[in-house]
Amino acid sequence: MIPILGKDENKVEDGMYLVLYHGFKKSDLSLTQGWGENGPMIGPLDYVDIVYGHDLKFKFSKAGGGKVYGFEDKDCLTATFGCICYNDIRYGYWKIINIRKGLPNEVSNTEVDKT
Image (cartoon, rainbow, N blue to C red):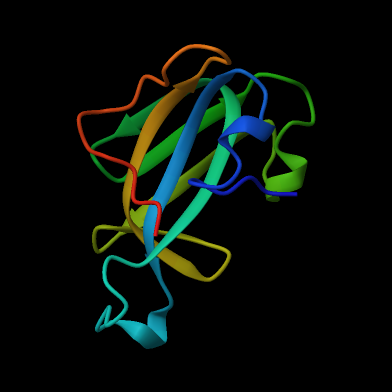
């Protein structure tokens, strides 16, 4: 099961996650449904490197941790026209969060869209 932001924070292991949201299908470029869909919480990760605002390189904390997402242990997502495509959905917003059970999540100053 791929954990989804806004639904599965309590079901994942502690650790750092790359989170994708504001997702839309290529056929729905108008975003008539507001800001789009919440996306996957990818992790837990050892690191995320963002190279020239284009490539997001990351490494899973555990061997084989990327399999559920269709990734290798070290992998990369590429931003094209300001969006990251994952499972045929384009995400215009991404961030890194730290999940720690029993403590507030360390999220940027933007509220998570739970629509």
